[in-house]
Image (cartoon, rainbow, N blue to C red; front, top):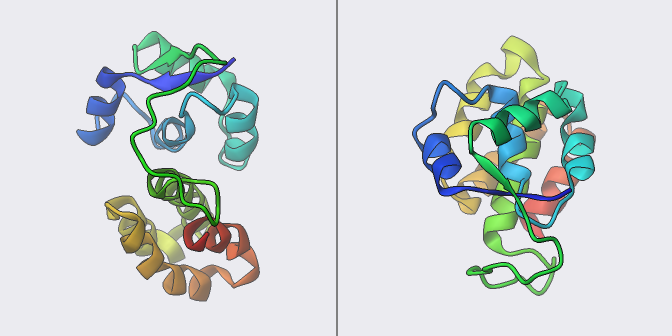
Length: 149
């Protein structure tokens, strides 16, 4: 099954609502109407995400089932090099960067806050060298590929 963000969900996300846990926030970012629940759960498995987290987002009205085969309202231009729009690169990069920096524990606390406050793709790209320094270049290969296309 595929889910898309609802307006209520986007509003709650922007307002950093306490009704969305940190793990659910990371999952919420990935739901775009194209990825299946299985894909999102596989991506966020390292954070302990479960189907119960998805169900909680659905129950709160933050996610709604997608049509699956229909065309989505794509308002972002697709980046030819990576096949992803800048918005998709930002969302995926943000989720990956959060996962990496959260895995650093207290050592990565401030860096994790910087990632959470990043409001654009460029801000995440600017943080990439600091994340690579803290976590190691190898741990950031996927993040670098997503951010830099």
